[in-house]
Image (cartoon, rainbow, N blue to C red; front, side, top):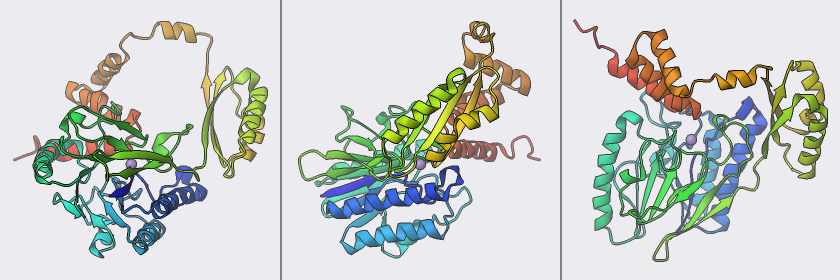
Length: 384
Ligand SMILES: [Mn+2]
């Protein structure tokens, strides 16, 4: 069996609220589908965050339908699980489930293994931090089912592993059941592959197919995996998406802003991009004036789809401030928070649990955490 593994397609996402950026996401998704068709894979596995919001509009729904139909016309199955972006905090049926109901796609997050030929596909929807213990025990049962199955086994999960990203990690590779030939992961937006001695197959994150707002502007490559299960071991190939609009971040010294802007413009032009790139410039210096920056960047603004910039004021006393910085910043933040809130437990929640998520741009996770903490303590102390 050969399959294409994708995740975090975030259909409907529009970086900078730009229609062009929304379109980029659809083009990336079309490229994923077209590659599956061209390579004649047997199935596409989607590891969650299909849509950007739990209640997607008509366009993202139609784009998913187009993709699933194009695959279906060639006899290529579409298997999926759900990410936190697909699951509403308000209870209800997740939108992608409609395609399962119509028999056009197969949801593999139902804890019951799905068979594709002799390959067993087992998946779980995104578990929130408060649900991780339950997921880990379900994964143990999944491993028993896997060990009884003679054919190939694929696990589909939408969770962050600490070994890949210590801020966004919700569990570790030690929590994964060992008896699978391939671990089709979703959730982390940077792509990555790791092998662990105790796990039978590779753990693979294809990453998002196009930069989402939480990723910031940086130079990055997006893609997906083509996986061949016909040999003794899974062999995987990460394939870069070619239609991606490039994004660049540059540092600029304010005192030489015009020269620097001209050299950046030359550099960007020399790449000959079909799609105007996205730029982000960090301007460092003293007494930075908006009008001077805007005028220095006029060429860059013209040759890019979006040109964002941020001023970083460097005062003469910066060295001194730096020297006086407390040695343990996080402890200092915690002490200040505890003093301001008058509560050590609330301060610990804010600094040790919430802040790392916000620093990692995990806004949905942060909201989940706040909401689940609120729900858990809603009636505490108020009970009659
Ligand atoms: Mn995602």
